[in-house]
Amino acid sequence: MVEHVQVTTEDYRKRAIEEAGYNTFLLKSRDVYIDLLTDSGTSAMSDRQWAGMMLGDESYAGSENFYHLEDAVKRHYGYPFLVPTHQGRGAEHILSNILIKEGDYVPGNMYFTTTKLHQELAGGQFFDAIIDEAHDPMNEHPFKGNFNIEKLDAFINKVGADKIPYVSMATTVNMAGGQPISLQNLKDLRALTDKYGIKIIHDMTRVAENAYFIQQREEGQQNKSVAAIVREICDLTDGATMSAKKDALVNIGGFIALRDEGIYNQVRNMVVVYEGLHTYGGLAGRDLEAMAIGIAESLDDFHIQARVGQVIYLGEKLIEYGVPIVKPIGSHGIFLNARAFLPHVSQDKFPAQTLAAEIYTNSGVRTMERGVVSAGRNKETGEHNYPKLELVRLTIPRRVYTQAHMDVVAESVAHVYEKRNEIKGLKMVYEPEYLRFFQAKFEVL
Ligand SMILES: Cc1ncc(COP(=O)(O)O)c(C=O)c1O
Image (cartoon, rainbow, N blue to C red; front, side, top):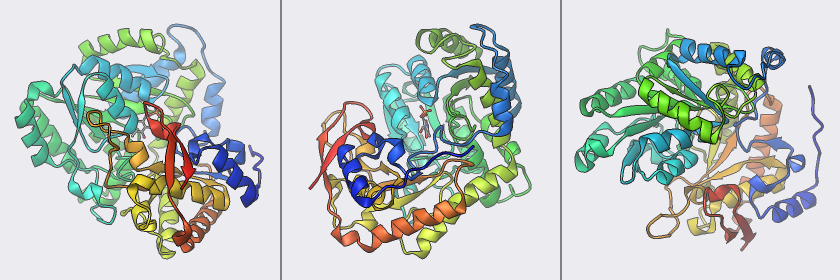
């Protein structure tokens, strides 16, 4: 299937981004030429997935498609209990509410926006236990998603294991630039958490991409398939939340997967309140079927190689142009280092937000901010959180674009880089309370 794409002029785009308050989330998709806002729900489904959509069993309860999905999750990920949700944050909401109590701490390998918010809304406080290298865009550590095990151990001793319902472990780490955790580090994390009787909850949104990096980079893993590594990762954890809109190649969907039947029963009960019955969780039968098929497709070695290969292709082009990006190149997108790109724009003037708007104006390529706007405010002081990483994410949907599109993107970013000295910052003129990056508005300084 092909889609009409509108070609716009620079003047048109200047008006469009101004009307959108310099927030690429507020642009109309019809005004976008190449859409690298996100890889979430934007991938192309396969012929098999579309065929599966036609087999949707839209019964309210006990849909055949639910059992196909349950089977796929058991077979490929090894989790015995499954509850579908409408997407990842639906899963995070329910699991956080069940596992976290007021005053608890949830350590993780860097935060993710929705995950952290749900932990906080449930009364918990996030603790960043990722290795320091992850906060340095230039550091080429092959597993920047790793936990600092000593730091985590010291933290557990400080606050007490009874205050930590679980460790939140993401594969890959989105906010660090799509960086993987190594199998060895996960084994070390398992040993540590076992010592204290703490659970590991796996944000498995991009687990196949993480497994691919393990296969490519970790000693002794080269002869294993991505599917086998994915299974090994899951086997080291107690449960998972999934945004199936990424790895699992669907436009909508997610789930909670568990080993503990007691927690499963609580989740199964609560999903009825917020999402829908436990055999559909806010999704249509056809969506469950597409997800079941997408999970199997996502684990194919050739698919993952091509998917990550395209990201690396774009990254290498940008490096050739001298554009500062996060290294090593991550799995789902290229992350421009906005601090190095626009050193004259201080962080309180939102350099990454500014850069995303400039790239759109230049070429109609839509990207997004991952810096101070995404980091939000400190709950106690009300001040902006100023993260070390001030990034623009060029996220690549799976099975959608060709390398020719990547060439256009690289040329556009290179062009903006050439005239970077002319770029000024932004000021925020509207700020919503939660997840402000989605809806905040800005004006040019
Ligand atoms: C690592 C990670 N976790 C959780 C989520 C939340 O998932 P969803 O957007 O499906 O609610 C996302 C989505 O971007 C993500 O990248």
